[in-house]
Amino acid sequence: MAFESLSERLQATLKKVRGQDVLTEENMEQMLREIRLALLEADVNYTVVREFINKTREKALGQDVLGTLKPGQVVVKIVHDELVELLGTSVSEISFEKKPTIIMMVGLQGSGKTTSAAKIALYIKNKYKKRPLLVAGDIYRPAAVQQLVTLGEQIDVPVFEKGTSVSAETIVIEALQHAKMNHNDVILIDTAGRLQIDAPLMQELANLKEIANPDEILLVVDALAGQEIANVAASFNDQLGITGAVLTKLDGDARGGGAISIRHITHVPIKFIGTGEKLEQLDLFYPDRMADRILGMGDVVSLVEKVQNVYDEEESKKAYNKMKRGTFGLDDMLEQLHQLKKMGPLSGLLGMLPGMSGMPKIDDEVSNERMKVIETLIYSMTPEERSHPEIINAKRKVRIAKGSGRTVADVNRLLKQFEQAKKTMEVMTNIDPMTGMPTQRPKRQNLSPNRKKVRKKKKNSKR
Image 1 (tube, rainbow, N blue to C red):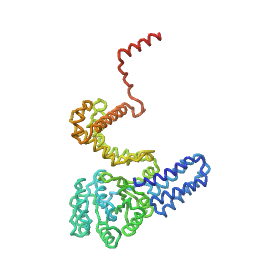
Image 2: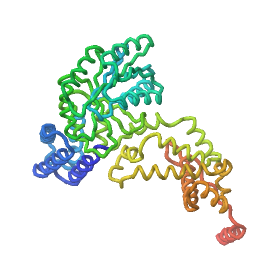
Image 3: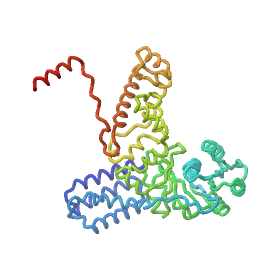
Image 4: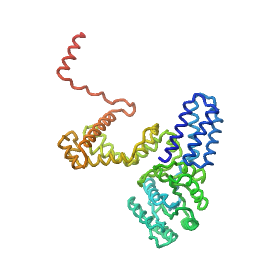
């Protein structure tokens, strides 16, 4: 997560405040000084930091926090509310009042415009059931045209392109006519970028804006760019009048402070965030949820939404019923792992759970490698072995290990993991979700004849 270092610093500072019995002016200033350092080290714009600290101090003093018992909760709420204010207060979705709705993607070269255009097209297609059209308007980078065509094929969205020999203005004019003839109700225009802002680039974008009259001009910015994000955003906003921002690479090792500065400097909302390389890994930006995550409060709502979007309800019911009948096999376990994998990196999912930010970091590359080992081992088994792992004896283990290019120890580890997963799921299937209590009493174990005799003797002696 891009805000990881900021999150750790802020949580450590607020933890100290929670430990104070009484908040004094002295320890409050110390807390504000640490928060200031955390924000500056995370590349938050200096002006933004100064305003954030002043507002936090003003609210703390205004609510008579000083001298009160248990001030930690009050201070955490103040910092949380200020973070939400800084990030944008509310979610900002795309409006589809006009038909067709025209979205123009702008930004520097390498920020992720082309991929973001495809991600947003897929998002709009799935959520709003629209018929989007992607327009390849970056004529200066031949790979961009082919990249958009390839992405369009992957998400089954048409792409209008004329190669690189036709001007971007001509391409957009013809794309608008094409969309009208083919009843496309959303048009996403991918435009050219530069390594830095220059006059020819801005003039071309201004021309495209005049031709297309877009409803949205979305600035795509790379979260790895640090404070430079704010400067880029300000320049594009001054010359084009952007309506929102899309933050990419938020799953990377970025400080994230530049992203926090965008809304304050441009006064336009962050609309989407890219949370991974896959085309499905795009989320609406919720300021309150992001503030929760930064302060270690988790983001359970987003986690539930991910589960609902990814998990196949019918497959989950089948797995549940198989577990009830005791017929849950390795194929079923693999299917559950595949559904979990669709939700994104495991480290990102754990970051959405309250209190998990302080846990040891999970190496997603290691997790993916383990997943590949599990897949290879299971695919090397016969259908009977997958359905009935209990029949896998020493001889079969050697064959499976050879067939998968792994070791017998890997096979044993997989079978042990399967048994553990099975036991856990057996317990979960017998828990009443309303009460949290077992739905049925555990079966009494069969006693051996000798144990029965001992129990009978004890019963008689009591009489």
